[in-house]
Image 1 (tube, rainbow, N blue to C red):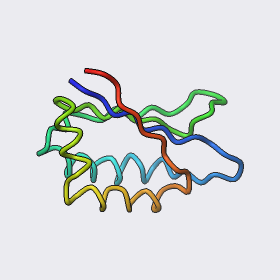
Image 2 (cartoon, one colour):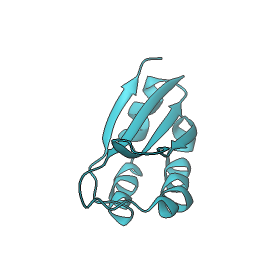
Image 3 (tube, rainbow, N blue to C red):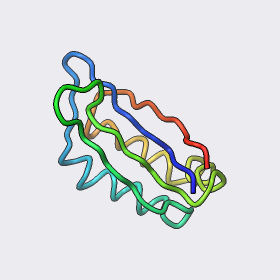
Image 4 (spheres, rainbow, N blue to C red):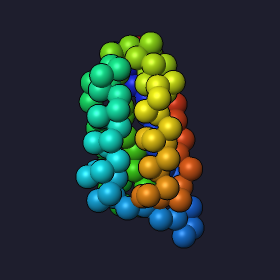
Length: 97
């Protein structure tokens, strides 16, 4: 299994709609990337003051599935949806298999 970790670093005046994120954005990503190897998404919200508004662990079958998802025709729609719930630029990184 391979993981993409997406974090949203808080900045002064940042906007982050957690309800939209969990109810709309995550299901959009699951629908788009599930057929390409996305196994699941675990959303984490901070308990108390933290440097992140949220973090999600996107679990994929392997690194090739991550590559396929990020290069897919559905990826632009998933990325464009970010503006609907936040003005924070997400930080993405991969964890090793």
